[in-house]
Length: 134
Image (cartoon, rainbow, N blue to C red; front, side, top):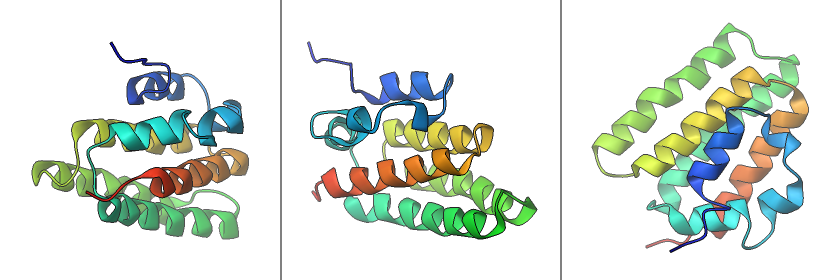
């Protein structure tokens, strides 16, 4: 039986209750913690992960310039949902990846403080770094 301490399900459950930046960076970013364990658990190519990360990074930079989410940046954020669904329907990403990114999007929208957005950015950077190409 595998340890679910640092699983997608465990992180998604926490993201429904608290901002990502309330989880200590050591628990999110260090080897064998959330980013590392989830990167190994996901069935995804690094290119697909980088595509979503690139979209989010552009949105986050725009929000940082403006100081908060506006209608345009929220629309760009919401457009990631159909992109994720398209990737899932084409078997380019797995359902765990869709659950994770959906939870991160909802977390950023609910807890839109810059510190939380920065931590989501750092978490995704670590996820890309830990991901293996197939």
